[in-house]
Amino acid sequence: MWHEQFTNKHNKTQYRFYEKYKDPYTDKWKRVSVVLNKNGKQSQKEAQKLLNERIESKLNDKTPTDLKTLTFHQACDEWLEHYKNHSGSKTTTIKEKTSNTNTVKSAINKDVLINKITHTYLQDIINEWAKSHSTGHVQSLVIVIRSVFKYTFKYYDLHDISILDKIDIPKKAKTRNELQAKRNNYLEDSEVKELLECFDYLIKHKSHATRKRNYEMVKALVEFQINNGMRIGELLAIKTDNVEVENKTLEIDGTINWVTDAETGAFGVKETTKTSKSYRTIGITTQSINLLKTLMLENKKENQWNDKFIDRGYIFTNTAGSPIDLNKVNNIIKEATDISSIKKRVTTHTLRHTHISTLAQLGINLKAIQDRVGHSDYKTTLEIYTHVTDQMAKDMMNKLEEAKQL
Image 1 (cartoon, rainbow, N blue to C red):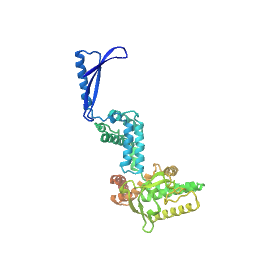
Image 2: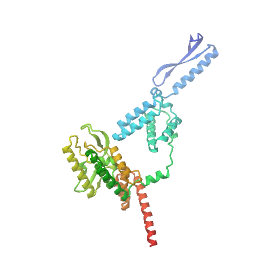
Image 3: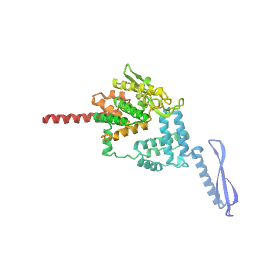
Image 4: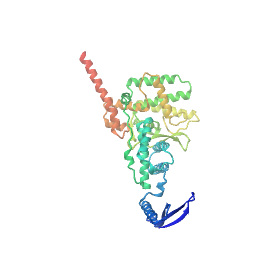
C-alpha cells in the first residue's frame, strides 16, 4: 500500500491510499484507492481494510463490463435481430414480434440498465398493460420480456433471471355476455341466409362499378368461407393453380402477408401456412367450384379491360389484381350485418366457426373436422364442436317434450 497527499477543492489536506492487485481474467495489474483525512497508524489500518474489501469486491464481480452498461432497449434490439436471423419465423410473425418489442420498449425508459431491473418494476408495467390490453396481448408482451432476459443470460452472463418467475399476468374474469358471445360465435342457417340477402341489397344499390365489384367479391368470400372454413388469410391466398376443377379439390398452401411485392409493386404476398398442420388439400362442393370459376372468369375480364389490373393468379381480388384488403372485407361485412337483424358481432372468424358448426351438426367426427380446417390443436375444434352438439341435444329434448304433449 502507498499513499499520496493532496489538497482538495476546499483547501483541506487529504490522503489517497492505493493498493494494486492482479486481474485474473487479463493477468494485468490494476489498482484501487480510498481517500481519508488522516495518515496516522489507525488511518493506515482503516485504509488497508477498505482497500482489501474493494479488491475482493472487484475479484468477485463476474459481471462483464459490457453488461454493466447494457440498457434494456439495447438488449431488446439485439434479441430481435437475433430472432430475425435465427428463428426461421415467417415474415408475419417477425412483424408481430417487432411490434410487440416496440410496445415493450415504449413502457421502459431508454436509459434503464437491464441488470438493474427488478420484478416489482416489471410487474407494475404488466399491471398497467392489463388495464388496456387483452390478456392475450399482455401474454405476447411478457413473452418478449422473457426472451430478452434469456438472451442476455445466454450471451452476457446475466446472473439472475429469477425475476421472471416472480412476475405474473393479471387475469380478468370473463363476463357472462363475453362467454356467451364466444360460445355463439357462429351463424345459424337462417342468419346466413339473411346476411347474404343483405349483401344482395347493398350490391343492388351500388352504382359505382369498382364499389359494386368489391361488394360482390366480399359476398363471394363470405359464402366460400362459410362453405369451406379456411382462415381468411388462407382464403385470400388462393390462386387458380390451387384449384382442381375436375377432382373438386382445393390445395391450401399459404396465407397472405400484407407487404408490397418486390417484382410487381402490388400489395399482398403469399407465404407459408400458419403451421405445418395448416397445409392441406380439402374437397369442395360443386357450388364452391362454380363460385371459383365465376370469380376466375371475372378476373380474366378485369385483366383484359383494366390496365391497372395485374394478374398474379389470385382469385379473391380487388380491381388491381391484389388480394382484396382485409380491412375492406371487415368493413363491408359489418355494413351488411348492421342492416340485418343479426345481433352477433360477425367477423371472418365467425364465418370459419360457422363451417365447423355445420360439420358438427352433420355428425362429422372431430378428427375429420380438425383436419379439414387445419387446427393443430384439437381443443380449438372441440370447443366449438362441444357447444354445437350440446345445443343439438337441447333441441332434441325440446322436440321430445313437444312430441310428448301431442
